Length: 76
Image 1 (tube, helix red, strand yellow):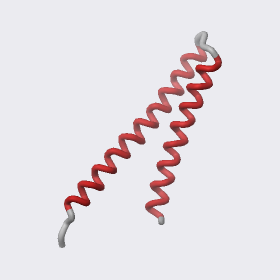
Image 2: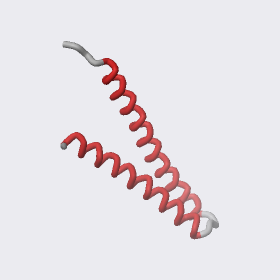
Image 3: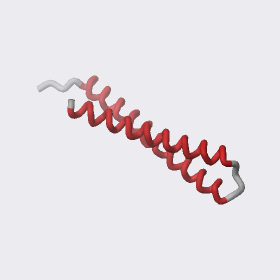
């Protein structure tokens, strides 16, 4: 039995980068929603609240797309 260490390191590296990127994207979505809540309580313009909500939903949609693509790769 021979282990291809280069391929194993490559899979590990890609998995690490994608995981950190996905967690970072989800975190940005949560931060955008919390900024929206903080601005809604204060005197913020409607445009900034709408922009925060749109950014949060975009981050969450990208997370769903990435997870769906990963499931597709596993199943296919």
